[in-house]
Structure formats: structure tokens, C-alpha cells
Image (cartoon, rainbow, N blue to C red; front, top):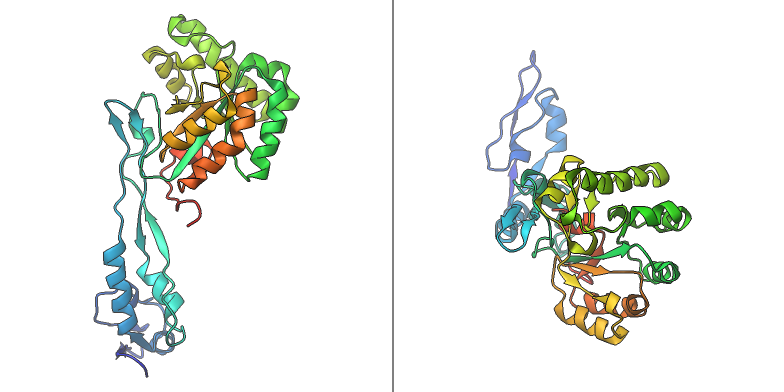
Length: 326
């Protein structure tokens, strides 16, 4: 038998269900099902390849990545956590114990959850995802510009990208079919208030109406359970954040702005986004001529930095992801 191996000794008592007594540090080998007969266990665990086990355990100790907890930053406010990662020794051993001589070990990984999540941080705005996560999101705020929505959707389809559209409620009420098309294409649709007001200047009752009316429309017209609220023009105060929070919504802003409403050249938009984008960024744009023409170049520039593009929910989640192209 190749490599150093340790026979698994099984002790059974005829009148009692078999109990395996095994020495060693590996829980998978030590803890055997006490209700199985010793002979059955002996067939299942005839021998342990200690060379393989030690190699897996050494790699696990070397490659473990600790999770990062969500936190409130003095500048960026609420920043989501990011899960850690470790080798699943037990599953890796199972997968590789019968591999042929000379074949590399195929490692099985599992995530280590962050102990603190966004939900535990309370009422704070969010401007970016975790800087350790190689993903960004395009935040497409929609209150006008219908003629550019489908061309942008076509480009997103071509590039196999899903992202998040924040819908103005009054726009949604008039454009339910187009909103349904956005949803049908697999994108996330979220809350951009009802009439595009400056939220910080509203009374509490009016602010509640602006958020609540659009939240209700998303459910009624599209069957969407709203999660995120993007204040129009980025204007908000703590009252805004509190109202959104009371309705189960997190207030989300942006990290990087295309400023496409000023009608910049598509080339300048591509240069700006490509040069400044970093992991976890939320990129603000609208269905404008500038952003529509720049969209493909932006995507290419983002990917060139090893970054995925996902929805706001994906970008702000603690789930791990490998860099694009890895």
C-alpha cells in the first residue's frame, strides 16, 4: 500500500452496537457513527492515507483567509463584511483518497461567515461594498431616458451582466411594461422615491409617502420585494435613512459617478470609470446617450482590472467571489 498508512482499529462488543475507538487529530476519522456495526465501519474506513491527510491539513493551515466584519467607517459609513475561506479537510480527503498516483489534490473550499453583517450596523447609509471583494455594481437610476433603456439592456445581455435599476415611482406608474422588461432580463429593480424630490427638504410624512408609494408600486406592478433605497440626486438626511430602515430598506448612494447628465463624451466616461474603479465600487449612471454609448467600454475597463459586475445586492453581500478571469 503506497504512502504511510495507519490501520483503523475497530473494537466491537457482540451484544452492543459497535463503537469505533480511533486515535488521531482528524474529526472525520475519529467520530464514526456509533449505531453502525464494527465490520461495516471497517469496510468503509479500511485505512487512512496519512501522507495525504497531512498534506491537506498543511495546505489548509497555510491558505486560510479570515473573514472581515461589517463596520461603520467615518468616511464611507456602513461597509459590508466579507466572508473568509478555508479548505474543507474532510471533503477534500473524501474527494482525493482514491486519486491516481501523481495527480494533484483537488481542494474543496468553504466560506467562513463574517461575525458582523450590515443588518447589525443599524441606520447608516452605504456608499460602497467591501474593498476586499472584486465586484462592482452599475446603479442605473431611471426617471427619464426611455429611448436608451433597451439599447443598454441589449448590451448588458451581450456581456452577460446583471445589475440594478433604481426606478422613480412616477416613471414606473407610466412605464410598467418597460419596467417589466428590465425585470424579465434578470436585473434587480429597486426604489428611487416617487417624484424625484430632494429628500432632506421633506417633512417626515411626505418623505414616508415618497418611499412607501414606490415600494408599494414595486410590489403591486412587478411583484418585487424592495430591499434598497437610492435617494434622488443623492440628497438625504438621517430622517431619510431612518424612514427607509423602518420599511426594511437600506439607503444606498454611490462611490463613483459618471455625471452622465452633463452629457460628457462616451470616451471620457470610459476613461474615468476605467481609471478610477476599485473593488466594491457602486457606479452611478442613468439611461442617457453618454452612458449608453460608453457602457460596453466601461464594462471592458472594469473587467480589465479583474473585477466582476453584479447587482447591488450581490456587491454588498458578504459572499466571496474570485476575480474576473481567474
